[in-house]
Length: 301
Ligand code: PAF
Image (cartoon, rainbow, N blue to C red; front, top):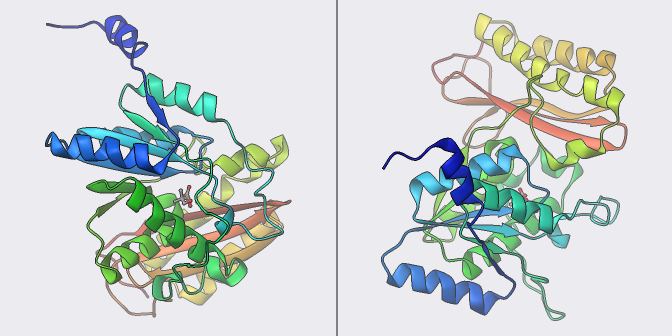
């Protein structure tokens, strides 16, 4: 049969997602799928879904028979002064967006993941050191702990994470390796708007003025990559980009670093291998992060 686009859209409108709130139901559902020989993918999120998340769902569906999207705003990765209370919570909208994809089979939306007696945390070092941890020392402990718990509740074959949070992806990969977890981690390319701004739930916090400044973060990352590839010295290139960001209207540069893409340690001049350029900036009270790869074949000046 050849179905028209309209017919396919009509079919999708009947795609009903199972919304699961408890650990036992979630584990039972995954067990049923696995027993039936189906492969399972998990896309962990904190909701407020945008095209970046939906592209993870799409890639998950290409690689597994069943796709679970978890939606949970994890308190342990927010510090006291951060935006836990005002973080957008839009479960109904999120489910509608997922239904439209026709590619998500279950949403796991636990009401709580920590009981009153909770007293064990996963404390990652290595890839978790530096960068985000400089200003958010609690963050990767919260992320590693919740991700490990989610893997227990949704024992999937694969889990997908966006490269937008590149250090998070590295920390999760490191945890899988260090703790011998039976799940494959897949990183997916950052989705950007037409101006180059990386999609993020936190973009909702930006005013119209800030929204017009924000894409310059990505532009500066591209300029850095281009200059490093040409052979300009790292220190000079970083200093110029920092200056340009502040001139563009960003209020602070938390970090702007050229790193080894695997260890996330600062890359030395003259070294070969995959390199990642990572940044975190502040625009008013909003903190934006982004990163790009320097072509693998490039040598640093
Ligand atoms: O990237 C996120 O949305 C969160 O850090 C994650 C991985 C869902 C853990 O809470």
